[in-house]
Image 1 (cartoon, helix red, strand yellow):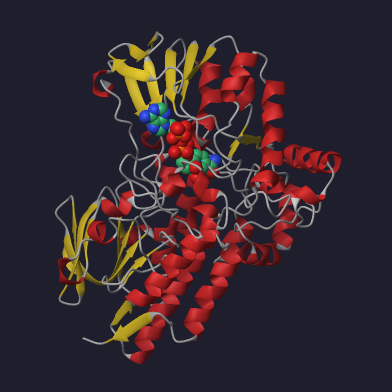
Image 2 (image 1 turned 90 degrees about the vertical axis):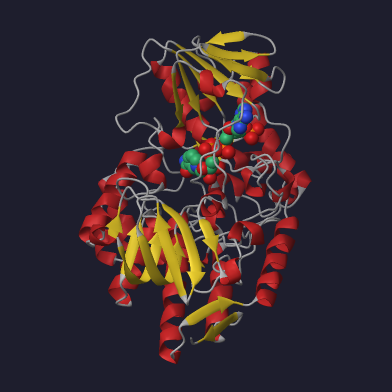
Length: 536
Ligand code: NAP
């Protein structure tokens, strides 16, 4: 394909879908979306592993731009499964006639800014031009495959969780290995254990996991939420994490250290019983700020692990000790720790006995050979920048984004980067993104971008560009507020520690979606302060 468009959008996950809708339907722009998958859904298109489920509640993990859509869609469980979210997104694509402007099975490989246009090329030979380039490539979409010696020699079936076969996998009667115990591994492991003959879990870092307490969402509860959904959305937008903390059982914000140990214990028990991340992690206002406060929560969860897991040496290996709770993304599970009480499950602590190589028929650690028929990699992603760097993006004077961000990403408001005119990044580095309920952040970004383009149009400006000094100040601010918390302490993907050689920078904005929205709105009200507008 060739042609000229007002905007090219890269990716047809939730961000790309809403960008297409907004720019086409509300601004009347011509838009082309390129999507590598054969369908919409992004994360929910790719991550089809057993147990894949969102950690945000169904009633909050959805679009809010269409009140009619909000009212008509029925969710079935407290937390939506991957197939249910994908059905929802397919419905959205049909309902708003999105597919006609999306080219599937097409990966953007290059986007160069020249002659006041973005020249975009794809792996299928398309060469189109557009005034605006909007990336909606996902924060956690570029797959991280560990560089273990012999990995390519494995003769059984090997899968990465984010490239799971669409037809599913039957592990019955098999010896299966799972490498990785992050949010994904913790969801996958109980499901594989229930099906496989033997499961060997290779754990590098023990992680904190809280019970999800998933349950069916009954019709009455759903109706009641829908009746007051506007207020729920308002609470989400003004919140820290993009979810409404509506549960009356959550204590008002106080320091964990202000309570007696008994009172504190009761609060943690309540959060544990309610399930999910926020009731536990936001029970006190200093769990992510004070090592001492954090330790009270961490100790509570460690005691729970020891109480659930019967074999004390397995319990010990599963007990996280190397990072404050919540500084790696908190995991939610259904029977994760209980799974290690099964006779067919073995835990291998690869810090004590490292994986030395992968052989055609198994995995050899420094202590033993584990013979396996299948191997699942739940080894995560090159987060935040990996999917952007996979495209050769060049701004003014041929400057490559990869070069500009070689020491860490630099984006003004996490939305745009100096030297790359008319490029907008949905949920980019330096925005709340992965620290928030994604649909809330996606809608805020897309709405802001559309308003900004409309503002430029009204002024007769064709070029919008972040100013370098505004960007510097924002990056400094993002780092400053992160360093005020415990978050940078963990070797997490938030700081890029999971990818060898990546610069260590805490990437997302931690000030909360409410505060972030306030700042973005303030910049807009001041004539998009920090952006320069010009004409050709
Ligand atoms: P992840 O959190 O990065 O976890 C990857 C796991 O693989 C970690 O246990 C990591 O160990 C291990 N690993 C990586 N390389 C390894 C190697 N060479 N040898 C041994 N182990 C290795 O990735 P993820 O679990 O896919 O989750 C990524 C993010 O996606 C989550 O944090 C969350 O934001 C999102 N997610 C959300 C949900 C949900 O909403 N329910 C579900 C899944 C994912 P180390 O910890 O030592 O690096």
